[in-house]
Length: 361
Image (tube, rainbow, N blue to C red; front, side, top):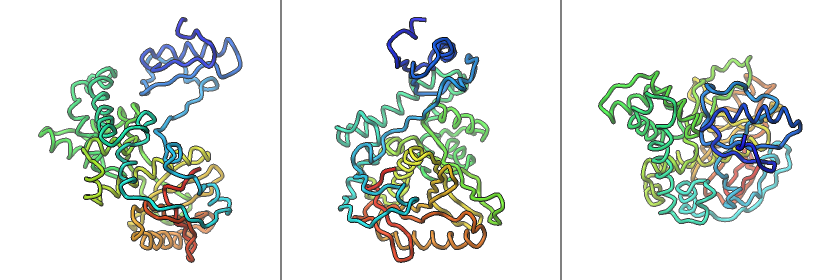
């Protein structure tokens, strides 16, 4: 097959447009033996239809994210998350951060091609990304209902943007779409649309954490919902840096999305997984990073420094309850990630304060 010709590693972009390429690659790998011959990239995941083999043992799957602040060099990387687990963390000044810079990081997102552009171009990029998906990619999917309901999918994306970084229910998303279109929509249909958005790497879920099957604390299982990059939410809501600063509540949710995007990237680098915590006593932890060996750390995420004290108190309260209930698997550390702190340090109560502009895996 001509598509497989070329020196290794041979890149085949948007392979999902011809799903049969997957099996062709798998067969070719079996013939050659060894590894590192092909790189298959794609902007969506096709349905299993047309693919005969899972690729297990031949093809390794790697999810590519938009860039973290450490990768785009907005984070100095002075503070390693690994150091929190290893106990090698040291207090240090990390430098002042301007709130306008934080807003811009959200608006621009982590797209490699936008690093040298300004806010106006970044805003247009996010809008173009959404429009291209709705107008070009969505109609090509093998989902006839989706092709008919592009308008509803757009309103679903807008609802996800308004509810970024929350455990918004399917019923609320359905209600938002019905209100916008004046046409009722079943929750089952919304679920189908969400699966399509996940297949196309536009939406994702931060699953709920459960620290022990023996725990007496009843935990909620609802996932926290995100768009793939906070810039997409900003684009869908037509937000500029100035608008964000004038709407601190929305700013806070999108800052949380920015931090959790980075934490997810750092977690995967460390071989871990990112979760969130929510129990039926209305106690929440924004992010939980669990390593493969079972150790985990808890993070509260706050834009401003004035919110650090309350966030630390929340972590300490939940930690005390966890220790009373499940002492064998208490968190390795508690930390507040701030957008505007100029220092990374350990408080007297043991809670770490970490500027987002200083983090790396």
